[in-house]
Length: 125
Image (cartoon, rainbow, N blue to C red; front, top):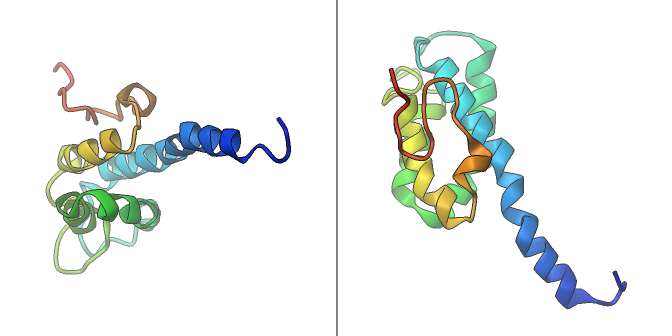
């Protein structure tokens, strides 16, 4: 790569940029599943970890879809007013899906997370 070849650098960055979101999305979904059974007054460390990952993903959601942002905030940001992941982990996955696709994140890269399907198909029971 030529050090002054900014055009190719921009193209390369655009091709891999969306891949940086994959671990954030996977982590939010992982902790949505883990946290959906805790009470609002729980001091379990997974609640804080899930919130940290959600806070990292929220700006990307906010830039693309306010409804997805509200769903993620309501379910993943800690509040004494309601139970964590109040709407269920699949609701979090369903909210993230359109933003994920709009950002160019392939469903196959995210995969299935413990009983939820981020790409809309429910697992077989």
